[in-house]
Length: 315
Image (cartoon, rainbow, N blue to C red; front, side):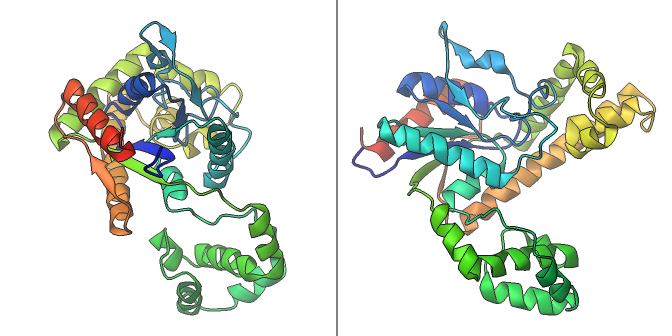
């Protein structure tokens, strides 16, 4: 691949058909899919997370996919876990001269690869935390911005507990122990070509409504009921969106199924808007996202994606 690109990413908000498009591209190019979805990594989160495993069966064969159903809700999977798991797959692909292909809508997961977040498993630092907590929010924000001018999450600058945590992490990275650990966790060079797919707002909201009603009909409420046999309502609510609202309904905190459906529809629509805002933020930081036509024409999106990828890879 003389283009230097060794990774392709397909991103976009929920309910725009990323998985089906990703599967077709995977079939066409012979790539495995690396999922970038913060809930599909959990076993048992199927209908609520939009896992759609059936979509990975295409043209009579199963499309290889990674980072789906890899852990349980007993663990807390985060962006650092995703990064480390991705790099393992990426290195294996490099050794086999294969392209790495990310498909997903969890913007921070994708951005952690594209923008090369320098994340480390920072140990507990009680003395440092106690020292930082004596400072004002303004002092902490000023100190953090001196070390890290471009903060990924702006709420880190206004909430004192987040400021303390973020600053303790950055100060650890500057320590001798942190520098030694950074060498241990040195990242491979990933050159990513990013494709974006979305829809016009009315069509996106229509898709969200249709998909939500389908999943409720398919048994999403029963899925959450079964999960509660093992996990607390608090754990399920923490997963957000479908799992939060269905849990609240089952707990009696939302009175009717219809009310739950309406509240959840609006929450998913707002979530899709936040996803698009995240991707625009990536672009503002200098990440080039090559957007496909926003119309609801799957064939046009597929052919446009092929054209973009072939041109980028100089096929």
